[in-house]
Amino acid sequence: MKNKLKKLIGTLPPSESGFRKRNRFHQGWWRAFVLAETEGDYPQKKGSGICNTILEGKNSRKNFLSPQIVEAVAQTIAERQSTRSGIIEEDRLFNNLLSSQPLCFNFFGELKTDTGFALQVLNQFWPELTAVKQVIFEFAPAKNYTHDNSAFDVAFEVEIDHKNGLKFVLRNFHSRCRPVRAVGLP
Image (cartoon, rainbow, N blue to C red):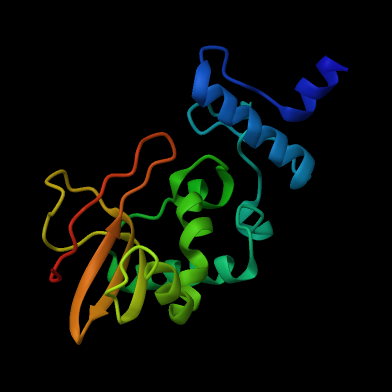
């Protein structure tokens, strides 16, 4: 039974341990038993599989939790074709269950497709907000606020009493979130 379960969950890198290995195992379980997908390709080792990836995610859209999130992904990819701001790695986005890109779309994607809902959610953290104008994924501002040229996973173009500004979220699956002061707002 144990070997059958391991085979269904898929390949875990032998060198990993702790937090990363547990999360990879959980995503292998999710892929096998919830998504009913076979193990996908290991990005770092061509020709071998790894349990936390799927195949053909761009077609199945199974790396996203709702149709609204799928729509947010499609809108973002279309926006990137005209703005060229921020980097969307489509293979990671569609096929890697542990990537921070699909994680952010699954957390914040429905806010992009419904800015009224976005305002209700963001008001829980910033009650002074009066409008959410836009939700932007993989936002790379012209000015380098982080001093390391990284993009923000998600940015919210917001308004407080007719003053425009941005709120940023930088999130990695394996690190702590760090707050960044809003630009253009008090």
